[in-house]
Image (cartoon, rainbow, N blue to C red):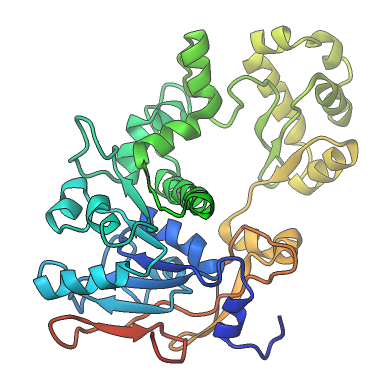
Length: 394
């Protein structure tokens, strides 16, 4: 793509060009799903209730969080789904849409008559994606769910933090972001299946399911071995010597994940006798606290950059602990282009978090910012082109 191409031309060159998505999501999990689709060229129409002062947990429309979550959408429609006229307008849009994404409470979409069965009746090819707190059925289906509740109920808070200091939440909305990403994957699977069958499908996940999925080998250790994992702080749950250690000017992450790496780390730390003293994994597991203390005593003698350089040269996975400003100053992060430039109608030249996906031969520009000023114009609602995008809305 050249710098002279506009948003429409850029979108036409992306993998999901030609895919029409109706987006009725709020908060973070649902918008995360839709953002994946929008970033890669889907024609996304967002549907909001008639509330000019709309604000959800991601903050006001002009805020960085909201703008980052809702970029690249072609238009926003204000529709009152509680009215017959508004319901009819959504159904008409659904007749020709490819994908419909929602993260309402289970009973709400049925009350509004915009559930899977309702929309499939007018468009059998529709792929309908849903995110809930706890699942579409079951004893908790009607409960409201948010990220921190899922972190607690999915086991994450019980294994996060220092031993004996109580449960600790992850520093990010990990359940939300994971559920949104997994739903985007499920939608693409259903679209692929539609190529063969000609019909759509309802795909759904929940914050709770996504969080349990993230527990991965801790969950497997319980299900298969009966082991209930606990907190290990910054140390690895099973690999001793892997963790966060103090340096002269901060901290460093060291990850000797094999016996070979452990021997190399002993040499880097100028303590080759440790390779014999703690030669086996069982010996290292037995003396975890002593090993962590011994490593810390050595790493304190030099700055972080010293240990990163030496470990990297030896082939041991390692890295510094960055603040957010340091993340985007790192040369590899800059090379990867994770700070995507965008021209905002109010902020001017700014940056947003780039998609982490890469398609060879495709750029990943932010084609438009999120719509800001919305107000319904009549009982059936109105369409508003996204803030920085020009052209009529079909």
